[in-house]
Image (cartoon, rainbow, N blue to C red):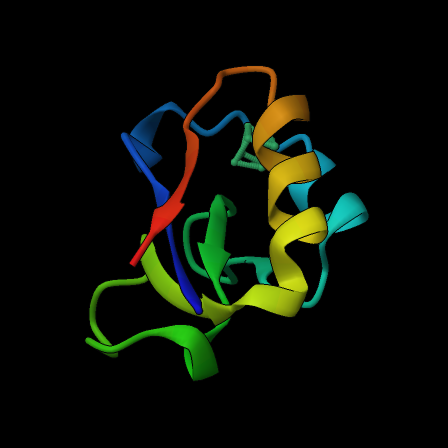
Length: 79
Ligand code: SF4
């Protein structure tokens, strides 16, 4: 199974790096604007850094990030 992970609205990211700390396999901080983004290898559209499709074995990882994000902008759903 694949999971769809979105950072939406990404503009609301406060760059506290919680998601990166909890799930660095999926999230990283962008060099240009300093906000969280999906690591490129998980994106279907390389230009959309707010959306990724990850394998099921990363469910605990992305769920913990989604639950802990202080602005609640990380969303996980079945793809
Ligand atoms: S946990 Fe949320 S607010 Fe913090 S860096 Fe990640 S997406 Fe941004």
